[in-house]
Length: 299
Image (cartoon, rainbow, N blue to C red):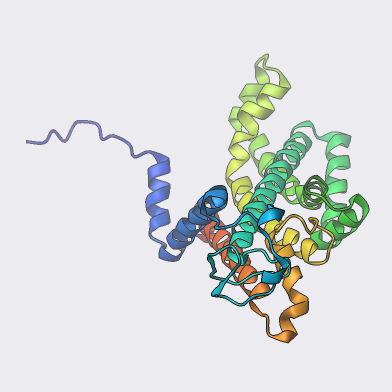
């Protein structure tokens, strides 16, 4: 006989979140697809049939060959080759790796900088708050793509330069979100109680205030990672992102664009399809996380 007086074990919040997440089938499929693409990107050197960085394995005689072509290396180029004679499937796998790497790096650094500035502005107040938020508001008045274009043109090509431009163009979104959440948390009793103790201000900010601002920042981070990947592809397509030696998805699309009218569609189309799938999957996951963390959006 069951003892009804026995206390019921509480379900962990993470398990509750996952159960609710699984109810949305498209979001579950998108999450699985995102994880799969990340794993494929991580293990690209083991999966790709050719190393697109190895100049010794490339042959210009194999350049711009259609899908299914058997190259001089003896294996079949399933998706064809690009203008440099690289196996397009291998180039896409490596390009996926570079695009995801840049997106995560830019999103993580922008999150760290923007969240810190937003929380500090809400906590300190006064002229510090006014200065930080006026700079953030001024930056938000410009489109991110415009600022990224200008910075990329000034900094030049390269992975570090591109990440710097993306961070500078996107940190303001995190700062505004963190400021709004921290301003609300700042008025709550637990913060007032922490301030009444001899705790250092830095401890109050990073141990108490910032962690409670995490839910909206997670949503913004998911969206901004997809935005960073999209911006990187745009800048690389325009010749302002990565150099031609870095086969990112945007660079692969750019390499094949001049040959579209001659019928060699595969050079641009296949990397473009991969880019669309990646961005859509991340955005669907981000939308579902947003809906679950915001009670007003729950159906």
